Length: 149
Length: 107
Image 1 (cartoon, chains in turn green, yellow):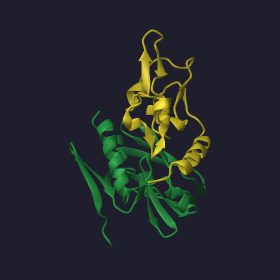
Image 2 (cartoon, chains in turn cyan, orange):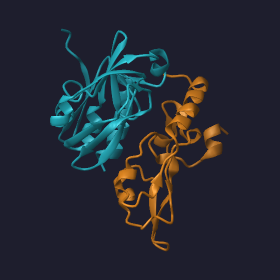
Image 3 (tube, chains in turn red, green):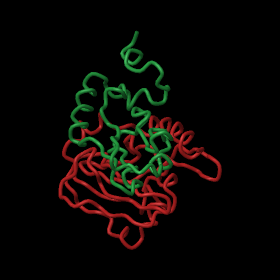
Image 4 (tube, chains in turn blue, orange):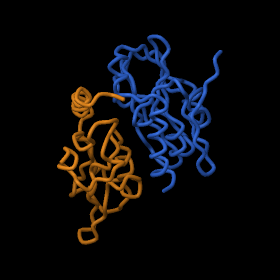
C-alpha cells in the first residue's frame, strides 16, 4: 500500500498535517478520491482548533450535496456543523465514531473518516475544492488567526 | 478602481477572497434578531473572525464585519442561548457561488 505524504506545519505544540493527493474545502473538510468513490472527513487543522472531540452526529439522508451539512461535531470547546465537500450517494457513515468520536482527533485522515460516498458530480465538485498545496497555504493563514488567538 | 475596492475599500486582505472569488459577492453572514439578543457576548467570544461587536449603549451585540464571516460557518448559532442568530439558506448561497465560479475559475 502506498504511504501518504504530508505537508506539515509545526505550530506551538501542534504538528498540523495536510495529506498530498487529497482535496480540501475552504470550510476544512477533505475528500479522498478513489475512482468513483470518496472518503470524507475533517481536517487536522479543524480538529486541532476544536480540541478533544466528544460527540459526532451524522445527518440523515441517502444523498448529500456539496456544501450540505454533513453532521454535527461537539468538542470540549464548541459545537460546529461539518460541511460536505463533494456530492454523492451515501455508502456508509463511520459507525465507530458513535462510540469513539475521539478517532477524529486522533486520526483525522485515517480511522477518523466520517462518510464514504459514491460520487455523482465530481468534475463540478472539484472546481470548488483545493488541492493539498493550496489548502496548506490557506491553512497557514487560518492558523495565524485561529490558533494564535 | 477594482470591483473589490469599489465595494469595501478597507477590507483586510485575508477576508477579500473566498477560493478566488470576491468575498463581498457571497451573501453568507449572520443576522441578529435584536429583540432576542440579550447581549451576553457568547457569539462574539466564540467567533475568531471578529464578525461581532458589542455596543455598550444598547447592551446588544451587532454584526460589525459581516464579510469576516467564514462561508458556511454557522457555529456561532450554537453559542447563542436565545437562538437570535440566523444565516441565509445554504442552497441560495450555493447557487450564487456556482455562478461566481464561472466568472472566477478555480486555481
